[in-house]
Image (tube, rainbow, N blue to C red; front, side, top):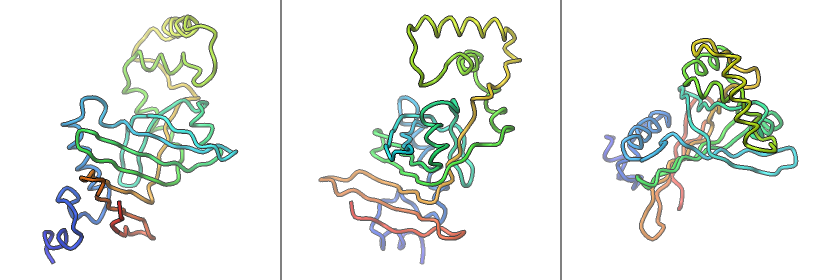
Length: 210
């Protein structure tokens, strides 16, 4: 059965293609989003849950992608990191208004190896590396002047832009996807949804009612 017939059988738009692996389709959609989104096509909503089962969500940037994982970086003492340490599972959602598409991703999450975190940290602009040292993320501050002073302090401590070590409290998280859903907006809310679910070492596809 050729690709076109498979698409007709499912009744989906051609943009869903006919990929056995959802990561391949994700890369195609992300490539398209990079051409159409005005700002940050790699922005995603990250949902976590704390020990009291209270969910929280915030926007982060996708900074790494493997054949199994979606990677972002943050302060390990932040609220999101504290919740991930307690409950190492998360959900991600990309929404591209320019394409009228979204992708939802679920799965367990773990910290990236130190070598990977070091490599990414060293690729960041000097100001961003200093900011990682200066910000006591998610904690209250009396005045923004306190943050500015901390930035100035760490600039003096690390004046060489090529020699700013990664803070011990800053690293990356990798979500190992076991479910990925692709969504396309439709007229009258008759949307199109294609879900991939990991079963063993293989991905199973199914379409969902809108």
